[in-house]
Image 1: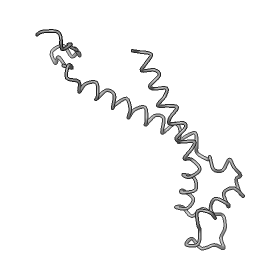
Image 2: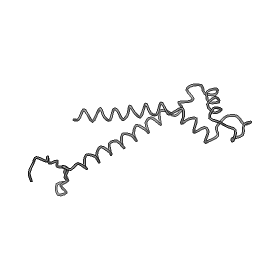
Image 3: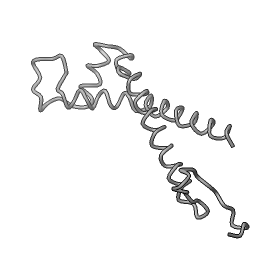
Image 4: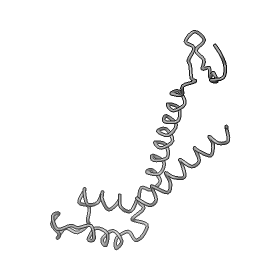
Length: 117
């Protein structure tokens, strides 16, 4: 059971890395559109398009420019995903019908349904 939990956490972190890597270019372009960072003073902010920002980003920073900020985003998504998934698993565990909490001893006891009280 312990190794299964390790695999689960590993999958959460790996999925965060994949999700961050696949969506990072779109996030960089979206941020540039919102901030108006185009490096071209002659174009009005209203005329800036997704295509224009993409071309400008590639021209100024190359392919690597689409992945600026990937490490902090991956770490953030990995930590957030792990905490969120762990909280979900814990809440799922304590919401089981055979779960009881002994307040006197501050410990958790699981009673199987076959056991009589």
